[in-house]
Amino acid sequence: MSGVSKEHLHRLLVDFRDRFAVPGVGAAVVASSGALDAAVVGTRRRGGSEPVEIGDQWHIGSCAKAMTAALYARLVERGDTEWGVPIGGFFPDLADRTDPGWLGPTIDEVLLCRSGMKANLSRTEMLNAWEDTSPVTDQRTRAVLSALSRPPRSRGTFRYSNLGYIVVGAAIDRIGGMPFEEALQVILLEPLGIRSAGFGPPPDVWGHQPKLQIGALTTGRGSPAQPGLARSDNPAVMTPAGRLHLALADWAKFQHLFLNQGHGMLEAGTIERLLAVPPGKGRGMAMGWAPAGGLDGISHGMQGSNTLWAATALIDAGSDRAAMVVANDGRTSLLRRSAHLAASILQPG
Image (cartoon, rainbow, N blue to C red; front, top):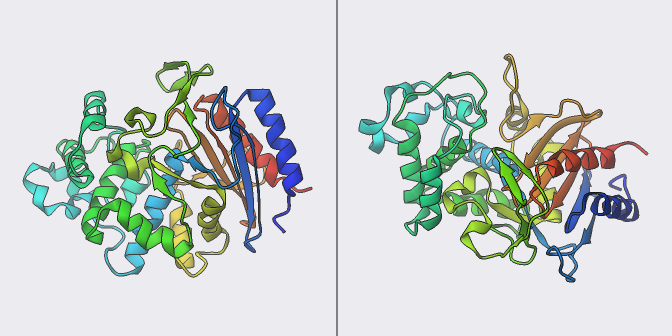
């Protein structure tokens, strides 16, 4: 048993939908035994009548960063690469345009967002990326040039970096001998039995952009964003940082790795590495995960949003169960609220 019934999950989701006026919301809880319970409530788009279904795919935003880190870990365990490689070392063909400062910071530091990498592509680069029709591997190479042509800034200090994960994706393009997207599917997701994963907006459930965005704050109930349109997600170059969608049951298969010391897919020591937060002052994160400070009974969590969706996954303190919550609504407040919902699902009794 997962420790929670589908009926209880359904009641929690109905209350969440009604209180916060989300179009659709889903949740699942998976136990270390593999037992899974899941439920969904609401509609596939605001104002529509088509209900969300249990097998629907949901966008998980930056929660995909943990998968990028796990994919790199799989490549290490296969002998294709190593931990501790300086990030500049993955791109010898770009050496003449790489600042020598990048011969120090390692892939580990990039995955931990402590390498000195800037946070994001520039606004102009993002706008251009939506229109770019060149191979996505070439787009990532250009992103690497943008990142590594200037020196690292404040190496060792935590700075959440989507650009860093794009650079890791470009490294995996080269390590795996195939595009990152294919490597993720073939080397990580398919061996886990994950079949519903794809990139970009999900095909059936529509995301909803907030009415107003001020910096990182997004608020107000906005209109649906049609699947298939480029602006219904971040541009393709950002896939390693978070452009993945999948069904709740499949996302649970990934969480299961962290409840079972790798479950034969990754070594126990690798799981510890992926979840470890380096010492230091201030905020910090592990490789795609973060310590769940302020939530009783929770050890680690992850959250993601492309401003059209909200997704949260939490692991309990005993690493016995994980809870996931997804909503097709990108308001900033829903990240906090979905975290509290996921924590309440994991509460005993």
